[in-house]
Length: 185
Image 1 (spheres, helix red, strand yellow):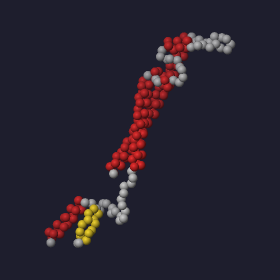
Image 2 (tube, rainbow, N blue to C red):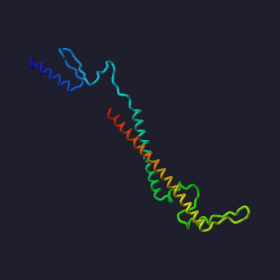
Image 3 (tube, rainbow, N blue to C red):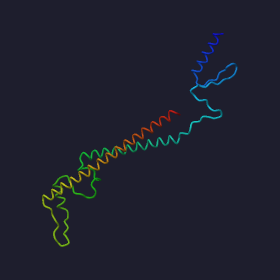
Image 4 (cartoon, rainbow, N blue to C red):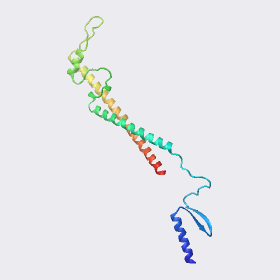
């Protein structure tokens, strides 16, 4: 008898280890055993997985928008870094309207002096600046253009760097969430 009871006890223990929920006979009756760490399901209720279609569409859309934002941000940052390296020759959107060429003083002087001079209303000739005044005007215009282009390039780099970091974080969070949704199905 002792050997038989030992066999049954060890057999049940092995059965409990193998299957978290098992059905077996005890003294001629069918008994359900549920693993102590898992809650017993309620009778009559069927466990269904919630529909995840909307969550998947949302997750993929957010990841797609983050990638498109990266594809727009990175080239703009690169362009601004290049403009920052030589702000005098930065893109044309830094200098509104028609402005004099500031590549060299001689070109600037030719453009200023060859521009059509309008006579004043009293009939006097238009003012033509002397050499030192032209040099001061050139240096001021050059410094202003460099300062403007540098400011705009730095601002663009900061804005698009922040946008890049935010889009990478949003992409990473949603991508991890999408992977966890895929694992749970």
